[in-house]
Length: 102
Image (cartoon, rainbow, N blue to C red; front, side, top):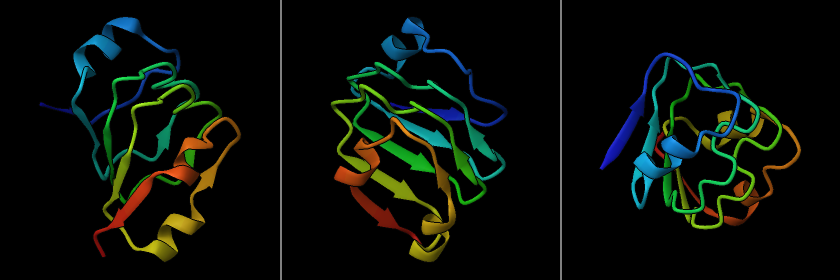
Protein backbone atom coordinates (compact mmCIF):
# COMPACT_ATOMS: atom_id res chain seq x y z
CA UNK A 1 0.00 0.00 0.00
CA UNK A 2 1.26 3.49 -0.83
CA UNK A 3 -0.27 6.54 0.79
CA UNK A 4 0.24 9.47 -1.62
CA UNK A 5 0.32 12.92 -0.09
CA UNK A 6 -0.26 15.48 -2.82
CA UNK A 7 -1.49 18.69 -1.21
CA UNK A 8 -0.24 19.20 2.33
CA UNK A 9 1.02 17.47 5.44
CA UNK A 10 -0.39 17.74 8.91
CA UNK A 11 1.81 19.31 11.53
CA UNK A 12 0.79 17.10 14.40
CA UNK A 13 1.17 13.36 14.71
CA UNK A 14 -2.14 11.71 13.95
CA UNK A 15 -2.50 8.18 15.29
CA UNK A 16 -5.18 7.37 12.69
CA UNK A 17 -2.76 8.33 9.93
CA UNK A 18 -0.14 6.03 11.46
CA UNK A 19 -2.68 3.19 11.37
CA UNK A 20 -3.33 3.84 7.67
CA UNK A 21 0.40 3.80 6.95
CA UNK A 22 0.91 0.52 8.81
CA UNK A 23 3.63 -1.50 7.09
CA UNK A 24 3.29 0.61 3.97
CA UNK A 25 4.94 3.36 2.07
CA UNK A 26 4.31 7.07 1.96
CA UNK A 27 4.90 9.05 -1.21
CA UNK A 28 5.32 12.79 -0.86
CA UNK A 29 4.76 14.19 -4.34
CA UNK A 30 6.98 16.72 -6.10
CA UNK A 31 4.66 19.68 -5.44
CA UNK A 32 5.13 19.44 -1.65
CA UNK A 33 7.70 22.00 -0.48
CA UNK A 34 7.78 21.30 3.26
CA UNK A 35 7.32 18.31 5.54
CA UNK A 36 5.88 19.85 8.66
CA UNK A 37 6.99 19.39 12.25
CA UNK A 38 5.98 16.03 13.74
CA UNK A 39 4.20 15.00 10.53
CA UNK A 40 5.06 11.31 10.96
CA UNK A 41 6.30 11.38 14.54
CA UNK A 42 5.67 8.06 16.25
CA UNK A 43 4.67 6.18 13.09
CA UNK A 44 6.90 3.24 13.97
CA UNK A 45 5.42 1.00 11.26
CA UNK A 46 6.43 3.36 8.45
CA UNK A 47 9.04 1.45 6.42
CA UNK A 48 9.61 3.47 3.25
CA UNK A 49 9.23 7.13 2.38
CA UNK A 50 9.35 8.41 -1.19
CA UNK A 51 10.21 12.12 -1.12
CA UNK A 52 9.57 14.32 -4.13
CA UNK A 53 12.29 16.63 -5.35
CA UNK A 54 10.21 19.70 -4.50
CA UNK A 55 10.79 19.29 -0.74
CA UNK A 56 13.14 21.96 0.57
CA UNK A 57 12.54 21.71 4.33
CA UNK A 58 11.95 18.83 6.72
CA UNK A 59 10.87 20.43 9.97
CA UNK A 60 11.66 19.42 13.53
CA UNK A 61 10.75 15.86 14.57
CA UNK A 62 8.97 15.08 11.28
CA UNK A 63 10.27 11.49 11.43
CA UNK A 64 10.98 11.20 15.18
CA UNK A 65 10.13 7.75 16.48
CA UNK A 66 9.85 6.18 13.02
CA UNK A 67 11.84 3.19 14.19
CA UNK A 68 10.63 0.97 11.33
CA UNK A 69 11.89 3.35 8.64
CA UNK A 70 14.65 1.66 6.69
CA UNK A 71 14.54 3.27 3.26
CA UNK A 72 14.10 6.72 1.75
CA UNK A 73 13.69 7.14 -1.98
CA UNK A 74 14.47 10.70 -3.04
CA UNK A 75 13.33 11.66 -6.52
CA UNK A 76 16.18 14.13 -6.94
CA UNK A 77 19.95 13.96 -6.88
CA UNK A 78 22.29 13.53 -3.94
CA UNK A 79 23.38 17.16 -4.41
CA UNK A 80 19.75 18.32 -4.11
CA UNK A 81 19.23 16.12 -1.04
CA UNK A 82 22.20 17.76 0.65
CA UNK A 83 20.59 21.17 0.09
CA UNK A 84 17.38 20.24 1.97
CA UNK A 85 17.11 21.92 5.37
CA UNK A 86 16.63 19.04 7.79
CA UNK A 87 15.84 20.29 11.27
CA UNK A 88 16.58 18.51 14.55
CA UNK A 89 14.81 15.35 15.62
CA UNK A 90 15.19 13.64 12.24
CA UNK A 91 18.30 11.60 13.05
CA UNK A 92 16.72 8.52 11.48
CA UNK A 93 17.33 10.13 8.08
CA UNK A 94 21.07 9.85 8.73
CA UNK A 95 20.85 6.13 9.48
CA UNK A 96 18.64 4.78 6.70
CA UNK A 97 19.45 3.86 3.12
CA UNK A 98 18.73 6.72 0.74
CA UNK A 99 18.18 5.94 -2.92
CA UNK A 100 18.59 8.84 -5.34
CA UNK A 101 16.57 8.67 -8.56
CA UNK A 102 18.62 11.26 -10.45
